[in-house]
Length: 105
Image (cartoon, rainbow, N blue to C red; front, side, top):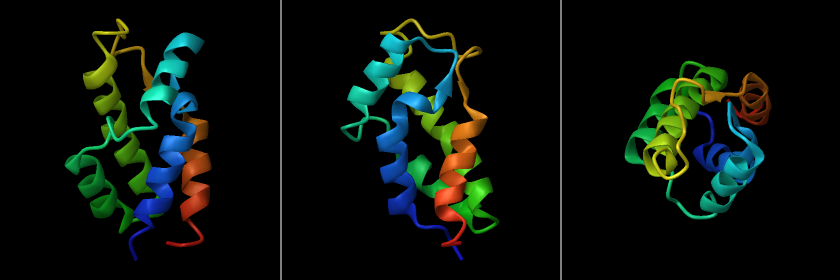
């Protein structure tokens, strides 16, 4: 069973400022502010989540968060001078989000 996309996406938007490591507080604030829109959403984010969450909620979260990270870097990377190699997904964020979905999946 595929995990619930709406629960995942709502949690990503709510927690956007704490999903990445390698950023400062000002950058986290900019990401939080931008996440109130769909600026980091993409068809590939949805498709990746749906494809991989069939395997497990955790796998869906891990892979979809990587797409979300790439979307953040594409939208804000140059503006905020982000180094893609240093901006990573926080493993604790994967645990939090997967924990929200596992009872459903």
